Amino acid sequence: MFTTTYNNLMSLREFFEQEPRFSGVPDGYCQIFTKVVSLVFGYCEVAGEYVPGRDWHAWGHNVRSGVYVDLSLDQFDVSLPNVNILPDNTSLLKVTEEATNEQRSLVLSELLIDHDMTVNELFGMIDSKVNLSFLTRLNIKTGLFLSKLTGGLAAEVC
Image 1 (cartoon, helix red, strand yellow):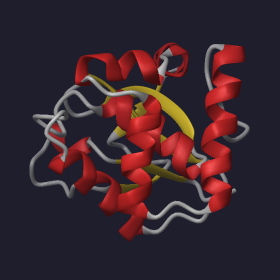
Image 2: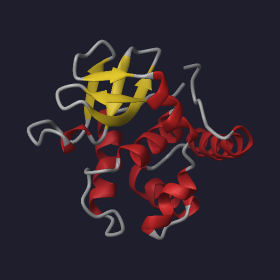
Image 3: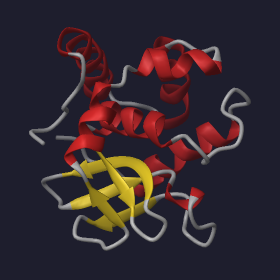
Image 4: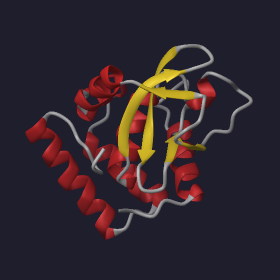
């Protein structure tokens, strides 16, 4: 659906690191990052476990390319890069249906309340950093609208 470049993902991660309202990145930001990656790049939201520590975690899944995109995996292991693109058969991440359903049921606007930020403000700031295309902006607006109707968002057929 959308072509994602590593540089765009890095810019997105850098935005969160530099925005004062998101202190302590990456620790505890997987839910927000996964929602944003889903809306900006059209990836599925999945969740389950970071296997080495058996910790709950969420990340993006590009079904067509067969890769996971994770902007917060380094919270578990500081030797990992800030942006991880892994084959979807990696042994580091294990998807579970229960955790995925939980992630997909979350509402981005509610996740942002603790950061004193609205969804429109967040995407306006991201757009200035990542230079979103018109189609991506349209996808975000459509995705936010559909998530209000359905209680969740599946950007791809997941």
